Length: 178
Image (cartoon, rainbow, N blue to C red; front, side, top):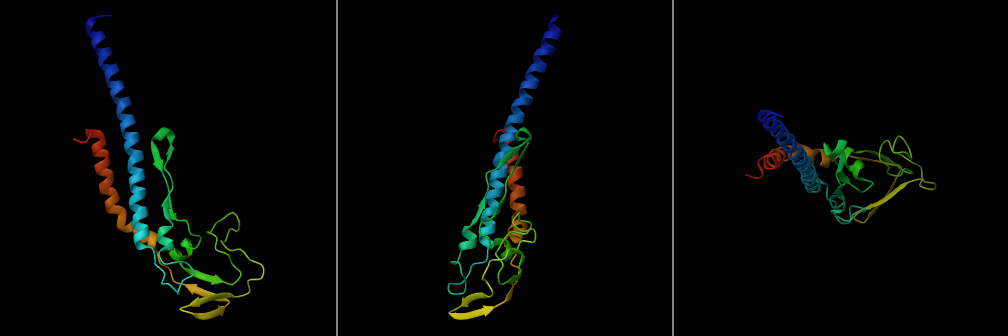
């Protein structure tokens, strides 16, 4: 092999090795960015979650906010795509977000659940909704809960911060933090 062909082969090998290393760096940065973005959104969700008032709620104040967690990120396509979910773990979280009618005998299930496609299920013997508001007893067949879109608000309020975080993280990855 002539010297110029050897130099070309060496340059190609170094270029390929450099591109492989860049791919690894970007995959790591993508995972880090996804985790960081989920963290930003989780904290915003907790910030905007409705907080009940002691005596006017069946759950302690702050219970919904404290239930908002992010799932571990998942690598797809060899790490080219990282993803995850964030949201409340309390069964009533979706009801608070979207609002809607609550009827006696229904248990809270997410819309589209396997248990019941419309998100409702009957419990034997539950003929009335019974609850207290500041010590006063109520018995009824139905209540309507107004929507409180805390996760949607968290998403809208976090978009710019997540965008800035993406630019910073990818820039750091490509430049080596310089």
